[in-house]
Image 1 (cartoon, one colour):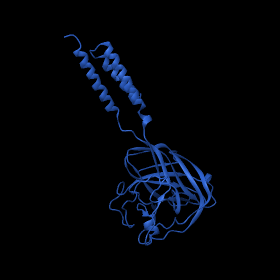
Image 2: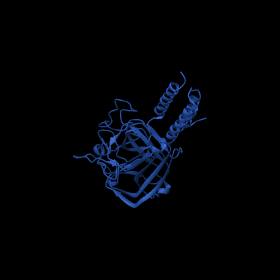
Image 3: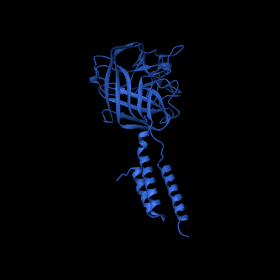
Length: 312
């Protein structure tokens, strides 16, 4: 049977007090102190620090396809980064994209959210050499994931605009070197839709630098993840280093290309963030042992004082 840490310490302290050679008044004071310590421990979770991250508003410059494999389509993963500075649990997220074709949000199929770390973690090193660089790319393999079809996330959709046009897009032009620079595939128009996802089991992430990857299955159309401003500006959450967005398909896997620098290219390549938010809480630092140690020291102090005041 699982016992709350405050209850456990209260019971343990009462047993210790019962064996001590001090008068009944001192024992009452110790039991009161124990109850106060236990109450403080039980209250600790309510002071957990909220975690929130956002890349800010959609800027309409780029629409990057991102989908899981299925229905005759190969997998595409678009990725953008975020930083965890203290261990945190991510309980929900949102991301904004385009749904193209004769598609309504209610016809969306599976939704997947993946978390990757930065290369060379979870990767084969050295890499294959099929892309210009793997520096600051997502790793080869996923760190953790949640999927609607598996029941590990739930999602809802909200249409922000019935028609929205992104100035450039990436869908099919995801190629190994030397054919990686295509300039993009031009403007794309669709419904602007925000996806809100809740994780039945939160992502438990130690302090590290990560990539967030949403994938949406759509029948009769495509999902494109929309870009947001770079560098991040209010109402976003600026951080450094803020890496640019990456993308890969099944043919390029396990390698990745930078959407702006590698695929769009040009004399001054654009760089992109992607529109998403993360919500959760920072996991409190372990404190039970420290508080219990203080309580035990207090017990010994009272015990010594009690013995000094007793008969010689």
